[in-house]
Image 1: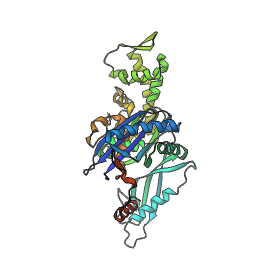
Image 2 (image 1 turned 60 degrees about the horizontal axis):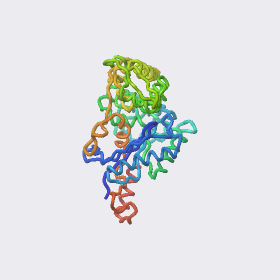
Image 3 (image 1 turned 180 degrees about the horizontal axis):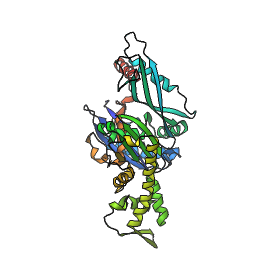
Image 4 (image 1 turned 30 degrees about the horizontal axis):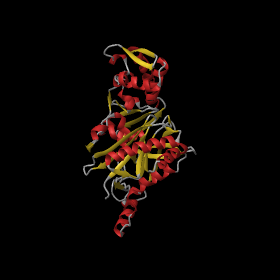
Length: 412
C-alpha cells in the first residue's frame, strides 16, 4: 500500500497549513489534500502555547487527510521565529590521496569540522549548507569530488535554532499525534517553491512576509549567502489599523485584505469604507488614510531589509531583484513599494512545478512555505488508506525488513 507520499506542516503566527501530496515519476507534486486552520498560541513565529497549537495542527491535518483520503503519521515542519540565527564558517582539509584526487570522505571531514564548531550553548545546528569550494586556493567548484588538488577549502552557511523553541514545536506536533521527519528553515523551503534556478545564479533576495515574522534568503551564484528572520510582518500592519481606527482585530484584518494598498501610487481612486464596529456604532475610514498607515509599516520593513543587505555587503550582488511571497505579499502595490525602496525589480512568488490533484488551490503565495517543505520531503511515508486496514503494524517479511534497513543507511 506504500506510495510516494510527502506531507508538510507550516505553523505560522496567524495560520497553520497542512498539505499532503504524492511525488510523481517526473518529480512533480500531485497535491492530494490541503488543510488550513487559525493559529492560536504562536508569538513572532515561536510556540507560546503548546496545547492551542496542537489543536490547530489537528484541525489542519484532519482537513487535509479527509480531502486526500489518506492518514499520515509524519510531516516535514517549517522552522522560523526570532530565535533563528545564521553564520558563515570557512575551513580546509589537506588531500592525502596519492593521486591528489578529492574524495567524498574529504568533503565529509569539512562537514564534521563544522559540526564541532563553537556555537551558543542553547542553540543547535539546524542546517549546514555549502556556499562554495576552493581547490588549491584558486578554482571555485560546485562539486569538488573527483577534482585534482592538494588542498580543499569550503565556506558553509550554518543555520542555528534555539533548542527551547524547537523543543516546544516538537511537543506540539507530537501532541497532535504526528512525528517530525525534518525541520526545515522556512525561507529555504519557500525559496525552493518559488525561485527559478536562473534567479539564484544571477543573485536574488526572497522576502517571505508572514503573520508574525518576515523571513529573507539571499542566493548568489546558485548558493545561499544569507538568511535572516525579522520580527515585523503582516500582523503588525493589522495592529496599526486596529489602533488607528479603534476597531477590533478581525475587522482590521478584513479591511487590510479587501482594501489594503502598500503604496498610494497603486491607489486607483479614494473612497470611504464604512465599518460597523458595534450594533450602535459605525466608523467611516478613508482609503487614502488607510493606505498611508499600511505604507508606513511596509516601508519600515523593506528599509530594515535594505539595511540588512547593505550590512552583509550583498545589496549590489542581487542582480535579478526581489521575490515577495507569503500572505503579507498579497497587499496591492507591494511590488511597487519594494521596487521604490530597493531600487531593483520585484515580483510576487507563487509555488511552481506542481502536478495534478488539487494543485490549483495552492497556487497562492500563502502556501509557498508548505509547498517548499514538500519538496524537501522524505518519500515513502507510511500511509493508510481510509476505510482500510492499518498496514503500518502488520508483520513484515524478510524482504521488507531488508529494504527498510537499506533505506535507513541510504538516507543516513
